Image (cartoon, rainbow, N blue to C red; front, top):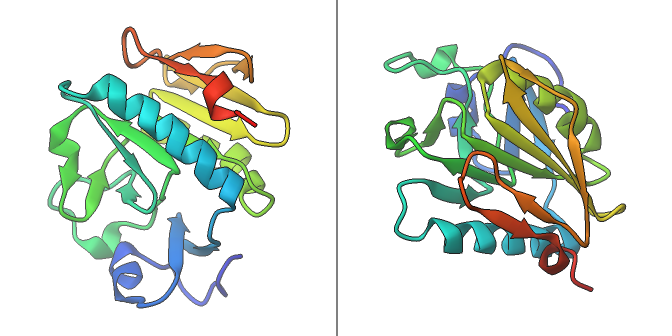
Length: 188
């Protein structure tokens, strides 16, 4: 649900709001609902598999809520940052992108889990934002079809997605040797 567009909101505004979770898309504030139990189960399983693989490695996995300021430049005032997302799961391999507030710049991997309230944003708006920001790999998990669309950035664009189903293992292109077992993710 979008807030009334009274003005262009920034990260400075977002930090002042005491209640609710919000994302900012080019200055438009959108409230985030709590995820469902199924959403949480999927998120925990993917995060766990990534965390186990990354143990002792330089990349780190995080899960929502964590602010990702996709286009913020170092030293830029908070009033200039008008795009802030909270991906369901993200992996960052450059520790220079991490600060006390979250992540500045594009994560290496972003995973979004569809829900009725987020489907449009995840498939359209965030897809475009992640592509523009330079996210190297973007997964869209669909609990209804028990599938994952994997978009890999090539020459600044996401190509046609590879689709994986519940019986598949997904090779993570940005993490050499890592595979996510969807049989565990979509376990009944």
